[in-house]
Length: 188
Image (cartoon, rainbow, N blue to C red):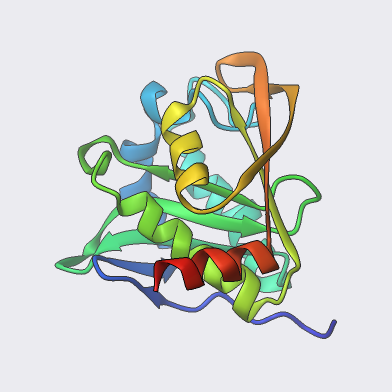
């Protein structure tokens, strides 16, 4: 496989997924640095979250990975309010962790993250051309599980994993390009 495409803007019915920039950290920090948001995220995230945590992550890890073509990260913005960040989603080429996301509390339970996941899945399979997408999530993270179920993923295993809140059972989810195509055709 040659060089992979860079992150580009994606648009859904209600969202604009804009490629992440270091400057976005100013808006991200107050939304992200909340226990309710981070508790079930990867245990490498420090808690308490540092005052410059979003900026350091964007500057030192996410943006350089985007420039290398290893990762693709977007901020989520409502189409009606495109300057305001409401969450984020990212795709990574790690073996068992290809997608991660978070959404600010005021915008949860509206189906927005499902919309973002569909756009990211399309990018993963149709633009990047990967054959399978894998993710892990805390069993206790019911909202994330529902998104996986709604978007055609299948549960393939359970193992212990470190999350910000500590070690918990984690579900391993998988979606193949073929299953994604079938899921999309069934929705038409």
